[in-house]
Structure formats: structure tokens, C-alpha cells
Image 1 (cartoon, rainbow, N blue to C red):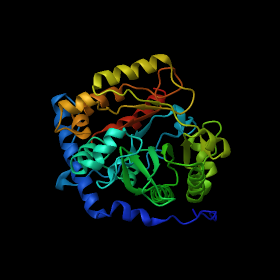
Image 2: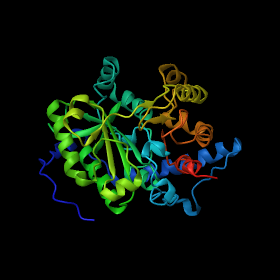
Image 3: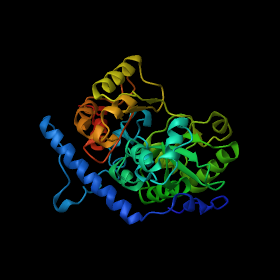
Image 4: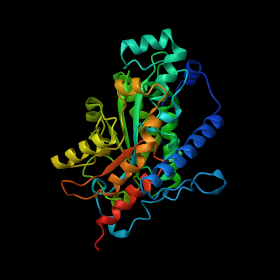
Length: 371
């Protein structure tokens, strides 16, 4: 499917590379894959000890094949007419943290003390911050291949960067540019014309009104007719008929009001808990209050606090999360999509390639079918 002509957008200034320095993309990819292999093995051992059915990657040490790359088009035809907010959709929390930059300054949204330590003791502070900031091992294309259809994109402008270079952020900034990442997503969608993604643009650290407009112009230029304008939440069949594949939520009210292509920000159930039992208790409480009317996200991501970090000086978010994935995924398997008050919709997690989470979320859609 060929795209219609795209409106002209000023070419981005690539000068930000000099701010961060460049690392070998191949080396970064190998490192991420090795981390994921370790994650799979660790979760497999944890799952076995808890009676789970998790398995490590197949022989030869290679990663599992992307069996969920086209899961939406493979759904039972009866589900093609179910609105997206009544389907079960896997998502990734802080999608872009696989490429956080080791040379990046501490985000300007963080406390002045942390920023000061980052400047005075960068060799100590930055590695410590980095290991509590990385939430994903797979890159964005690998996440899409694995079946993720909700991407959590925290956009930021780096003060030390050039005027229009936009990055992503989670305590520190990413090596990846926003425009390059959106282009990568668009190219993946062209190869999978019946898959649909929900892109949640959030945060907007350091963005002026001019930068908001520049970002929206990039979105329109890159996705073109793939964008689904806001309105009633569509079904897969409706989106396929219109050739639309992207719902883009934008958590800035002024920009949202000016552009019909953008959807309001999705409610995100964030427990802010380091203990998995407390996280599940929070999610069950939110379910008891009733689900939102449209698209929304239940986050099964654990969150460290200062007390936890001090007690675990050699720890990391990865080490905190992996031992509890089997417990959290067991909760996921008990959920049901649909219009009911206690139903779930998007379920987002950390280190999404490390266990059966994505397949488990997709499989929940079978509960919508008559017995």
C-alpha cells in the first residue's frame, strides 16, 4: 500500500549526536538480546519454582520467533467488530528505555539534588540512575514483532541539544530521536497492514508550544492516512476498511484541542508500589471502582522507592522485576476484557519479552467468544 504525498516538515537537526556521543547500534542490540536471554532463563526458573509454565528461548541460545507479529489479523472474525476498548491489548511501560544514554545528563524534571549529584559525581550517579531507569530490553520493532500494541512514549526536549531534536526520557534521555522512532513504527505498520497500534505521547518535558506543533507536524507527515481521528472508539473491521492503523493519544490539552488527529490521554492505573502484592491489591481496587468508558491501561509495572534502593544498593529495576513476573502474569491470566465494570483493556508491563506476558494478554480475547 503506497502512502499519499506527505506534507513537508523541516528536516530535523541531527546535531544532538554530538551532545550524547554515539555507541555502536550492533553492540547495543547484542547487549539487549543477551539481557533478554538471561531474563527468559531467570523467569523460567522462577516460574518453575512457583509451578508456572514458563520456558526459556529455544535451542542454540536464539530468541523466540515473533509468533504474535500479526495477532490482530489472526483474531477470530467475531472479534473484528468489537471496539478496541473492549479488547485485551498488550503494552509496554516506558517503551523506549532500552536505549537510554549512559552519557546523558539527568533529566531536568528530576530533583535538584539528583541533578547536582549527576554533575558532581557523574561516574557514580549516572550508572546508579540508569540501572533503575531501564524497563525494556527489546527495541521498538522487536516489541511490535512480539505483539505489543500500546507504546508508552515519554517525549522530551534536551536543553543541551539542538532546537528541534526531540528524544524520549525516563530519568535520563535516550539516544533515539522521536522522529526516527515514529518512522520505524510507520515502516513496521506498512509491513503489517492489518495491525493497529496505540501510541501514547506523554510527559513533554521541555516542549514549548512551537515544539508541540513541530511534533504534531512530524506525526502527520510520518503516519499520514494511517492516523485514526478521534471520535467513537473504532473496531478492527472499521479501521481496516479505512486503512487506518494508528490511534495517537496526546497528553497536552491545548495541542489536543487544535488537532482532530489526536486522542485524549489514556487513563493509566499506576500503583507506584515496589511489592507485587500491593500492586495487585491496587489494581483490584481500581477494578472495583469501575473501568473508564474508553481506552485505558492497567500497569503491572513495579516501582522502586528510596527505601528499596537503599536496602538494595546492588539492585536494579530488572532485578526487582524479574523474580515477580510469574506472580504478576498469573494475575493477568485471571482478567477479562469487555464492557463490564471490572473488565480490563490495555495491560502494560516491564521487560515484556522475558516471559509469556504478551501471549497471555492476547489470549484473554478468547474469553469474549461464546462457549
